Image 1: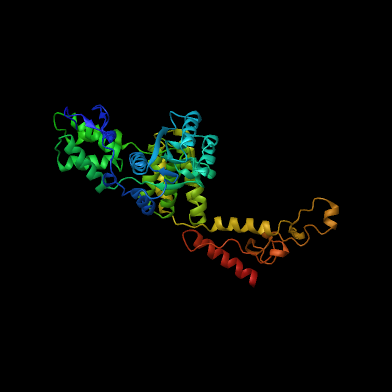
Image 2: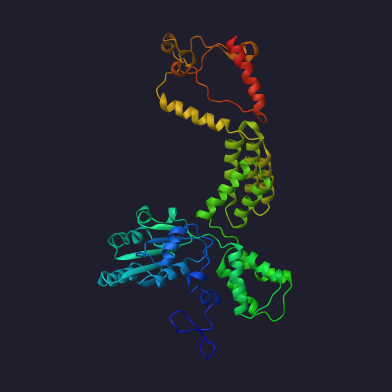
Length: 430
């Protein structure tokens, strides 16, 4: 603070009081930086000590976990020219200006370009960095909330190191909260602290924004009023086309497969509550009913298809009810992927023997020429046989006559199917 009570930033210049608390509270030193959400400790230690030159990095993580703060600390630790741009506001023109300036001082001083929201650059814009990174004209530090594997080009990823920043753990958030409360001269109960920490969900920026709101509250709020006030900070983070979408969809399917109805309901309805297309969730359940349950409970597929029909007839939000019924049924049904495995076995056999001949007795013989060639000769009509079973004929090509593809499990209805197949096998061996 200066004599007038205004806060000074790291350069000693005045920082306006209207600057958001989250910006004013960015860590000025490594000691203040909450690094608990970073696993790559070796590279972090190198950056902290300022050893060597700055490597090109991609900082990946959700909002409010320290991506910008980390980049700025790197810029202040190393003897470099640090330039900060946002892909939301900047384009190739601004990047080219940074590169041109960097080329003039390349021999004297390294230039570090920090590009926030780098995933917003298209493929051509990202590829424009490649020659400058290779020659060492600039070191690129990109920040993104999206999975680099999907949003950044493979050529760029091969030239950078990805550092993942995870949501801040509760102890780290608690440290930030205590400091912010002291700075704002706010005293609050343990219950309010817990509400703020839970609502922040690992996001330091949201936490500091909530502290700012608390500083404007004259009368202490009741718990319900406080929860309502902070509800917008707890909005579901879910991108229907991005990484979060597929992570949650994966958790949904794995919970169904793991026979955990509570988890399956949570992940399934988390997608729906976030605005995902109910048809997507239902399609996944139809696939799951056949792939992971199959003949262990044939009713599972029937119910999944009926759920799709119910959604078409009654729409949303009423369709949530049959969707919940289907989720709980699929999660608790006996599981078998034997039909799914048999399908892949059949495909493999087809690829290995793509031209295997159909046995003559299985061929159709609509003409006299075909009949004279032996088509259909020796075919036994099962309904004319004892038990309607042909236990003597071979129904596969000669090359794979001994092939076994479907082996039922001992779960659910497949146990009865296995018993029936054992009876058929005994008849054939008789």
